Length: 260
Length: 253
Image (tube, rainbow over the protein chains, first blue to last red):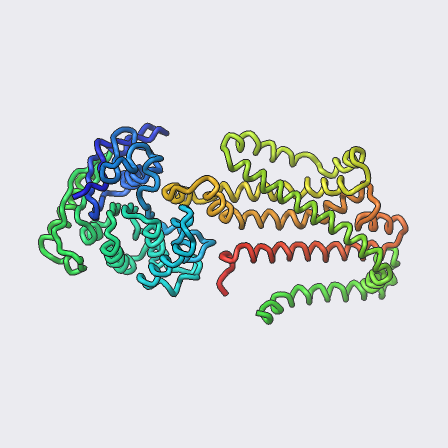
């Protein structure tokens, strides 16, 4: 299997104000098409790690390679920019653009022909049942709808590699559950590679092929487990005995490592 | 739509009508001299007496105000974009921009007269000096307060400097820009009249001064009334432009 993301011996310290080291010796491999979750308590540097992978931040030491060794997207932070699509906790839609225009942002920025982009946008909106909202401004959307549009925008930007930073963190519990299944559906259609950061253990288990636990100060990967569940995933899977045990084990890992 | 608009307009109109009525009554009942406080009726009569003079003066002043405002807006936006383009420039220029406001512009008007004479230029400059600052500061603030996560989003999409400016920063700054423009537009007419006070051949400022010198007090009031109406019209024009330019900001009905 092809490797999509390879992180080796990555460390990150913030220069100011106290030279705090947040990430220490992170090693991570993600295969193409895999759905991987990183869980950890808040403040454990999960978001910092995604920032570095996306290229908006630099590691203090260590290497990051994106793609199958062709050199694409590896090296400097600037080189990684554009190699992944980033979905943050807030949908960050442009309020002055309609839903349709928002999801066309990627093609517009890359000077793609507008007509073709518009056609693809219509198709995506229809496929995901959002066509009724195509002409609406983001201010009129619910939180869940807005986050769906944000995900479609990232997919439209031609991303086969998605970084999700607590994408459902701002949503209520019910919307969250609907969105998790919606995300899995989208993921299976596009075959993207996903690295998802969350602090919700059940969410991580439901979505992922592999779950890594990030903990400690500075944070490092303390454990990694494969989720042995069939796809497509269903919520009932979470009730299986071995999954309940796994959830308990991961919870212990998160809490035990918390500094007292 | 229309009834709602009327419902909002009605209360202030009633108040204005009441004030005008009381004013008329007081002046008539106490036989106040038209040279001190003319009645609304006398002001209306004065307005009707000199339509040519008032209309030509209005055009002159309106032109100065609108042209000056346009120049000030262009300069203000350009300055804000310049400040936004580099942190070093911002640190160097922003304090100067603020400090420039400590200069009393009204005191510069006579100097401008000495340098540039009685023509259009000194009036335009006074209007520009008054209107530039609110536009520049509001626009600079708008550009600086773009959500940093949006900036990061554009970076991860490999947007260029100009793309980020055109598709993110300028639209995000538009509401702030219009706040500044609304302040500037109310300054613009007053500034044009101040410019005319110092020395001019025509305009509403000249008309106010000459009618005051001739003790034509009703005409002074008439010109003040015209100026207010004009100011209101300019403000409403900016409001309309804002609605057209920022349709997403319109509250859902």
